[in-house]
Amino acid sequence: MISTVVAFGLLASAGSAAANPKMVVDVRTGRVIAHEDAFRKWYPASLTKLMTAYVTFKALKSGKLALDTPVIMSKKATDQPASKMYFKPGSKLTMDSALKILLVKSANDIAVAVAETVGGSVDQFVALMNSEAARLGMNSTRFINPHGLPGKGQYTTARDLAVLALQLKREFPEYQGYFSLEGISTGKKDYPNYNTLIGRFDGADGMKTGFICASGFNQVSSATRDGRTVISVVLGADSLAGRADDSANLLQQGLMASSAEGVPLSSLAPYGNTAAVTDVSAEICNPKAAKVRSENRDDAGRTVLHSPYIHEMTRPPVYSFAGLIPGSEQVASTVGANEIANVPIPQPRPTF
Image 1 (cartoon, helix red, strand yellow):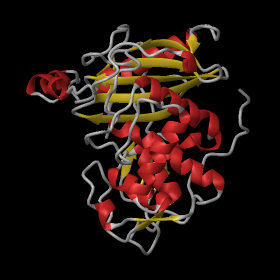
Image 2: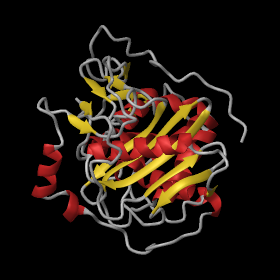
Image 3: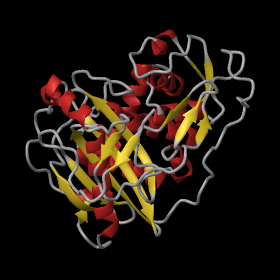
């Protein structure tokens, strides 16, 4: 269970790892309001699942798949390391439930099952991921798996993730509700969203978090106020609190900036170190860093957030059903497992 407490009046985040790439972009104009180390290669961790979602949304929109298409848990899927759902091989869930788990719980076993369902195999799906990245102009990105677990040859940049987030917003408005879910329920267990801005930052509506030692704490976020949407990217923060604070501060900066401010994302020229992939494992996964993170909690064990733009969530999260199809594995009888629960209502595609 994710639990936080807000310390008001402090703008600085809990801290960041070296380099700490950041970016904030206006969705309608595509203009970059602020950026730092935007072209520095970084491990995406579970932000990889944004591209997994993109490829899946494209298959859904084309009619190749539907939200009630069964996703079968293969042995390969269930063998993936945590974070995972621990469903048994042969278990089935709908694509709707799979997407919710993918984007809220960030389960690696579900990412592989989705990849196999959409692409036929993980290798074919990864090829689709890289093909879409190239088509979108994510020139400093390469994927080797659909979940973001570490491996040689998997990298991205804050700039490329902003491109991807922008396209997710523009191309698939009908599926944006998956990113803003406060939590999911399998019928047996509830899982709050790892994105602690949802319900705590005014207007927050997505998108994804990620962590491995090599990347530090990553987060792509979005927020909408008064019809204006901005996207932030934070890579390499040193804690859950750090990435949430940095994201909130960037989103607020973006929402308060003039719509004419900044340069077009498409024209932002590469700068800085664009060669080596940064690995912050030594800074993030060591006893001293772990101690600092443990000290950034209150007496009840809740993470302390410092951004003045994050407030307490004064009610329990709303949980959307995301469980197995009856018969593939027993689920609680009180949940209508055949129902596609809380599917986002399609919205007209905005004009840009």
